[in-house]
Length: 256
Ligand SMILES: Nc1ncnc2c1ncn2[C@@H]1O[C@H](COP(=O)(O)OP(=O)(O)OP(=O)(O)O)[C@@H](O)[C@H]1O
Image (cartoon, rainbow, N blue to C red; front, side, top):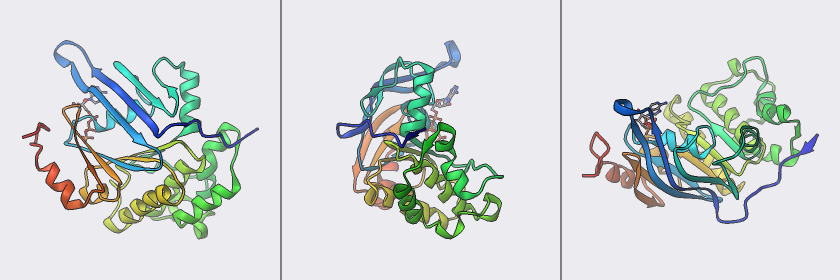
């Protein structure tokens, strides 16, 4: 058994894409989902990715998280280049250095909250760093619910378990794809506050895809995608500021 993996990052970028392209299909069904995207996600920062439907947000996240292959360019997590990695090494990188939160909570129903949180480490044969785990559980506000099973928890609480699971291994970066998409606004606000606190108080790096300008306003920075390209950025966003930028994109995702 090994202990919690040491961070692999040395620079400011927790993840970086350089001229990243992703093409699906061929001939008439060919879709350029990402068109030479270059972007950095800084360490200890909360970044939101926004853009119209079909603009490439999920594709960017999946390519940068090593969940999907790329058609061109390069992408790194910390100092590790993902392109060209063998499947086994990619799986290990994802397991040890990347946390995921999805719209569906993806918890195992037969396990308690705590067992769900530590499951990825248990599978990897890694021993949780107890002090870190306690901080994560405290920050996510789950202390009284650890022996509950998912069916005994509200949607918001289940997503908090999923967030704690993503952070438990102290990853280099957490990718969250519409993490509040299945939640009412109050539970959503709790998850967003937690993600922000994990950056502010625990020093984590979080990248979140969202459609919601209010959700994006919790981030330190918003990156806007349209037609597979980065078209804009906003630092210290407000919901109104994000909405204003979004209005510049028409329904097809092109800048007006
Ligand atoms: N597996 C796939 N095969 C073919 N085309 C795909 C595939 N996945 C995505 N696409 C296409 O790539 C483009 C970008 O899709 P993507 O899901 O990344 O957009 P998105 O911005 O996340 O959209 P949404 O907000 O609706 O989730 C779209 O035109 C989509 O139809």
